[in-house]
Length: 346
Image 1 (cartoon, rainbow, N blue to C red):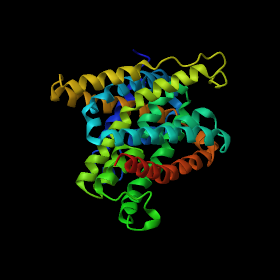
Image 2 (spheres, rainbow, N blue to C red):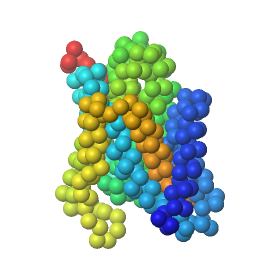
Image 3 (cartoon, one colour):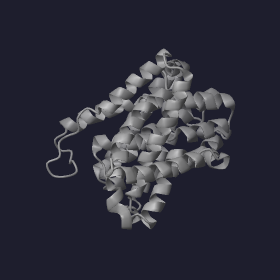
Image 4 (cartoon, one colour):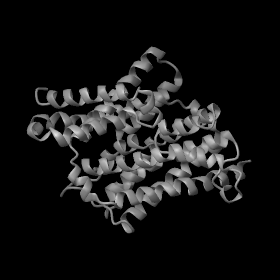
């Protein structure tokens, strides 16, 4: 505990500040959540005053990035219920599934073959773009065993394009009357909600884009997004199985063993089921979700503290290039998927 305490104390302090920043109206309306604020603060502190005391903080930061992260992902299930699925119907679930699988597959193929990125970075950017932004990147890191710099690069990429999406998507809806945009411009507020929820990166960004159209669009968008977030657990289990079977996948470090089943993802599903049963008092759920935000923010702060800007500069424009291509795919390809599924099930 003596070794862990200094690092945990610093990450807790940064996390509490980040949670306070996340409640400021202007920042929240521009998609700055507690998680993005925490990693930003961590990077600032880590690159200004971390080096002289880095050895003292190391064990606590590692604990935050690994153990607290897994606990945060598990508790994240308290934000979801199985009832959410019924609100978007079969169409919403199918659209989310197709967008997730196509985006992640595209990220792996283009990232490794076109942009010449390492596979871990490609997968992390793909997971963040395909599922739920920074939270998905953090949850995928233990499975692919990515480095801190790779995780930060992926988070930075999805945050940039997710922020752009908040302003671009309402403009797309406003242009729905243009025939050239018909395949990607939803024709109703509900259709726009499903489109936004199935293709925008972060939950806060989804809400902001939906609210710019209407309250109904925002509600549909958030529910669709929650269903997409719920797919994180089966995605991680499937990814771990694929990595374990793929003998050509190059794991970081010599002699490293292939990833096993991510049990924290299984526990995440269990928490969703318990929450769906309604056996937990609302007061307990509210307290647990606040604790969850703190744990995830501490993990993000720990990640930022161990990230060096020199490594980000060394990564160059390739990660942003991959993120940009995936962003275009989410807008156009995701719009086409929405239109096709809607036409088939109407």
